Length: 179
Ligand code: IMP
Image (cartoon, rainbow, N blue to C red; front, side, top):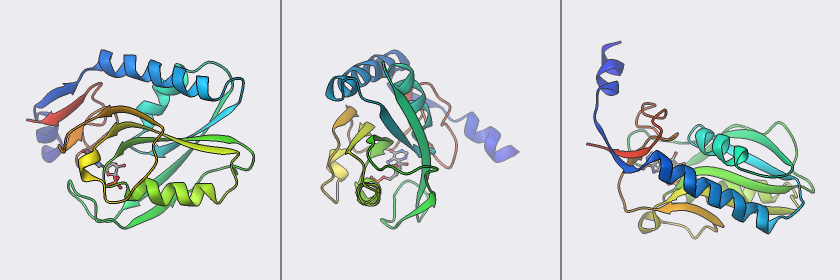
């Protein structure tokens, strides 16, 4: 119990506040709906980091929405990804003929999204787009297309609003940096 109590007590400085996040998510929802008027939109939530982003995004959307969940893991621990990505939990349903939007917490090196877009594109969606709450462009190792970006940030390790450090801080309603 002691290590987790210590982690909960770690101060986190606010980088992007909760109202700023909510405002931006409403804008992204409107933008996505403008691009797919009158269509059912199938959102793919990439666990675990995107769970809060998805929850708020779908609640801000008008019209027909469905969703599914998948989990990826990049080997390695700590604050850097090793670049090796694997699928840990697959989707429940197929994507054929659907308008699909991948919902991801952050695009950093781009390796996870690059892999994910490839495997999902191969499943025959009618269209495939990606929404990321955050982007760190200075860290990119592969060119990856992201149609909807919430916030562009510098190369800093962030936590909160779904993002973790060693599984902690996901519940914070803001994006922050460990002080
Ligand atoms: P990639 O480097 O673009 O493949 O990012 C892979 C994953 O690393 C993201 O989906 C996040 O889960 C995690 N990640 C990258 N940067 C951060 C960060 O600043 N905080 C927390 N997790 C991060």
